[in-house]
Image (cartoon, rainbow, N blue to C red; front, side, top):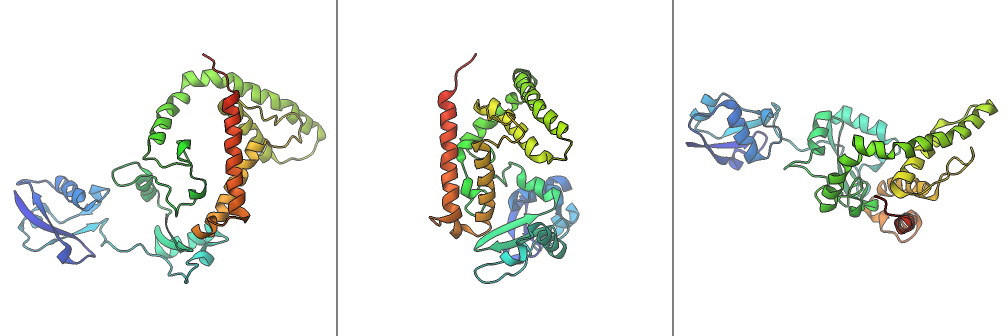
Length: 299
């Protein structure tokens, strides 16, 4: 075994680390070894010269990632206090695309003190969203979902490195399997059939109508019956309003988006939208508790 020094190109050679190298390494094995010491996610993206050049070098060996030197994530400078808020909103899709076109597939922005890293690269997204030694999904105070974070939910609104998340995902696969589908297919079928009288009436009117709200009511009707044991009464008539639970969830998502766009300080206000969001969360919990209390055990 021999010991060689390695450092990331873009950093000072003085940051080099000493790494023990096997006596007869191949290039792939050397890449894996170097990647493990420098927390490089994709070892094959670790670019070195030949193994012979590495072993014969008396100087620290520079490492590139994807053929490039390491560097700070680029992004617009921003303004004091507000950061990049006015460069992103209200057209955040168009403005993010403009920033990607300018700075590349990974950018850094700030919004009222919150730092946000964004990417439009599927490869980078796959790395970040994978549950691995390098990444996990924690809803931090800077995360858009933080105001409605709910660890007990187990999915969507909680951290992935929790017992609640592991328990939920223990039961999710069998709940979506063929045996389970056969069990709740009749309920879904009845939900669809109950909607026919409403769609027939709309057809008889001979008028154009917006499909979206009816698809929302159809989907939520099935979920409400299967998951919560609640009949939302969405198809008693063509003009039947969405159930309170559905409206509360929709409004909470809308308020959450609005609140997070203003920064973490805004979410702490005891009035206005933050207060409204807190009240909605309490009401949703009340409706869920009522549903659980009314539930019956069937075998």
